Figure 1: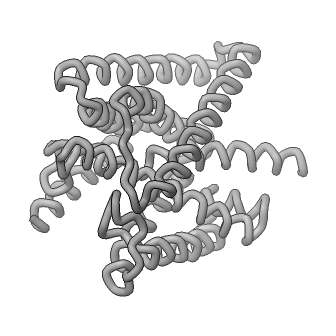
Figure 2: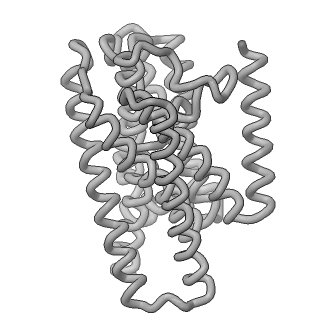
Length: 296
């Protein structure tokens, strides 16, 4: 099992690195395919037949990638007018705000149901999939286009570091179950370990790297305390994304969202924590950058 996980991880990493070396557009396309497959798995968890889920996912994925690419070309060639760009930016910001507020509502609902369990209707599962997956992918692409690859990696590292350190901290010290009715193995000790690790890694990145990163934007505009608060909120959201998928899989009576990634499950299994974190993190970066420019 471990060998299979390692091989799959190496292959995925090779594909991602190769795509980035080709171009940022190729990199975004590869990630777009991954998010589209995650949407397919998400819709199947809603009870939608596989072929219908595939059709909806393909339509949503191709549409969002095509529109984004066309906008990218217009921006690159400076053919998009200022009014159209302003309207697109405003609409995108409102979309991310709406998605983030919905994730906040889900967070509250999951926290309240952590001991009793949670039943989510198929309609809600399907609608949230169609709304949330494009928001995560578009935030990924926008962060890379506006701030560079370092920003994207720093956002993803919030999820990766929190997940890895929560696992090891929970294994070593975990006693108090976080959500026994939703994901029995998670512990409060693991949560704290993940949050502390992300905070410390953020400080190291902010003071050790010259590139714009998520923690550097927080620290420059809100100070060290602002980063600590931001990190705690974003790690909490990543955990909610994980618990939300665990709830959907528990309802569906399955262990993994699919078997597309041997040893890892499906694409949604690998991207679940990023669904709420990417939109909220990029929204924070936009707001903090705007406030920073106003204060300058």
